[in-house]
Length: 478
Ligand code: SF4
Image 1: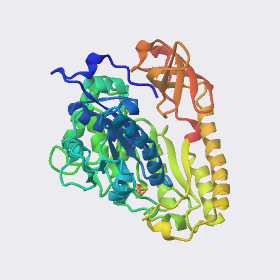
Image 2 (image 1 turned 180 degrees about the vertical axis):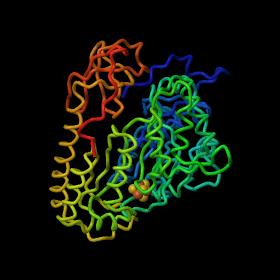
Image 3 (image 1 turned 45 degrees about the horizontal axis):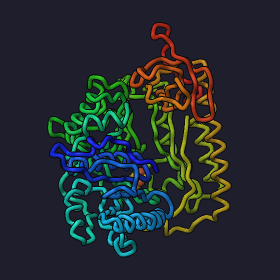
Image 4 (image 1 turned 90 degrees about the vertical axis):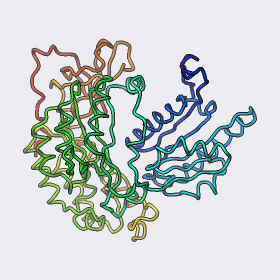
């Protein structure tokens, strides 16, 4: 792995003292990516510069995810490799601290210190703001563990990112507005690892997004495990909604695009549907997981909505915003799923016409109710997964094909792989490749889509004057 090539001067504090180095490896979802960035910001204020060379680090942080099967075992095997680096550092007379953060840290707790003696710090997702204090304790030699759900709001204690750090992260940013979940779907570990729903106050989020926009960020995606359950304190002291928060953020100068993820169908309220209707900055692209098309399986999953509820909601959303593209998550082979249940899922895919979807073969998560239910045979799950994959990919290909010949607004994000090429995102999150000047990074410009690839689009810049409005794509009509 290449080292971070910073000039030596950048590795010194203003007092001339050499900075320590931190290597952070992030697993899992965007919420973990955001957490890692905020940990890096907090550690920067404590004198740690980032490095991408773990062997050179004074502190190695593994920010873990518990959503995949055998997540904990994978972390233990990674810790075996880190242990070798720690031994090598000690041989050079350097102390290397190792911290395990994230959902595996929360779920495994003390077991990590027992099974992996090279670990110095185990820190749960709600305690990152305490990292500098935990490091100070770990430097004294004892294993430190903090997996509490503290009463204080960690966001109020985490350091704000520096302007250079924001710029280095690009023109699109993620901002956590909500954490935890009270839904207790029977397959999911989130309510156990991230705890009860918590929403940040509106003023705190507005200040963070203003700082991002001021440093050049053009697109912000609000994230939360159940983001549309957002109910943070508004400026009037009363609980706000995600719809109202989006309205407030849309007023911020310089911000061109807003998105949010991941949502629960049961929390799509009137204010959020109105935001889709009224806010041009809110992109017409919504990830709304349904998980199954069978009411029997939805009930066994404790999803708290039926297939008909979901389809009614899709209709209301498309009435509010005709060009809305929907994506979903599906779990295949949930305990008790019959062929008939599975066919109901395939039917739903046809009826809803998703632009993209993610599908997973059910695998039990220890400690969740579904893990104790009768499990389906693996070959049955695999066969259904392939059938669902065909159906979903067919819709995705149709959706992408319908973009050819259309003019889409593209936010240019970074240089492409080919010389002279930029890559940006369409309103529907498709990567779009265009030959264009690097100075256009950060601009939202109309692009004529001339070619559709497997997972991305290709196009040419269009002058703003001859731009047609972004079309409602025919394949997305309800
Ligand atoms: S709503 Fe989402 S985060 Fe909450 S329990 Fe269900 S799947 Fe997990």
